[in-house]
Length: 257
Length: 206
Image (cartoon, rainbow over all chains, first blue to last red; front, side):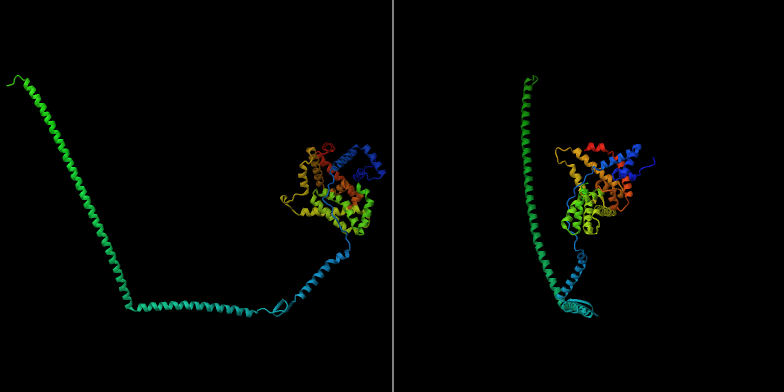
């Protein structure tokens, strides 16, 4: 058997897009070639697996308008541009917009063109302003200077008159002396009072101390007296007892004369 | 496929839409919107990008419908627009480097979160989660394919285009379509074997 189907033929066969003659030819071939049959079956199985992937529903179906008047679509953008230019020109005309170009440069305006300030004018304004500012500052400085000069003059005038200074000095001295004297008086008075108080306190203290001592001495004497009397009584008792004992012994003594 | 049965009606709609019939145009969009969305969704595996491509495709369709000579070739023509936008979008995304934490939660993620919450008390959560997981794996498998193979597989397996139509849509020869299909199916077969997915596991999970 010389015929051998190509891979392409097998595809035709698999999808059944094949002429009956060729189909018969391949059928014959498969009978004697089980490996080709197996392959075809495996491919068929693969197709069956693939068939498990189902369709999905799209979200929505759009509504379409047919493309009509394509000539107009082509020209539409040019018409739009032309209309826009016309609109701009009309608006410019209505608002009195004008443009001119001369030595002063490009000028645009609504209504009549009015020239602005020239460079010289601007420079003048700036200079004027600067001059004004300078004048003002100079005036301020001058007034300050003047007031300082006046103060200086007054001071110098005072310096020159010695009399006045002496008088002022004298006055100041007197004032100071008076203040010192009054302070001294005040201090003296205070010291006297304090001293007196100290002396009184001391003497009072002294008195009370003396009285206390006297009391102590008296108490000591009293104690001594008491002690002496007690001793005397004891001695008397003792003498009495002794005399009694002596009498007893004398009475009992046969050797008595 | 359903669309094939609707072909005559689609042809009529295209003719009407070309003449500027708004109702016909919107009917046409209604017919094809879900298909193109699912085509792009399988290409990207991402809702937002799929929506973007779908919208661009239908805007382009609306604009260029007049240039379509033969109404019978509408289907490959439409898929051609869609796959061009898919390619463009993928390139744009590749050029744009986005930090993972900057990514906004997409509809796919939201669906994932919603699917983890069982709405039906009687439903078996393991079963639901299992089938969802399989879907994720299939999406991942598609994403693993090279772009040109992925486009061919999606058009063939999910969109039901004829090999001839795919060749027209992608502007390649029919043989190239077939060989891409062959390699793509082979890669998928290998991936499924690797992930231990086969007919039995599907039936078990279903």
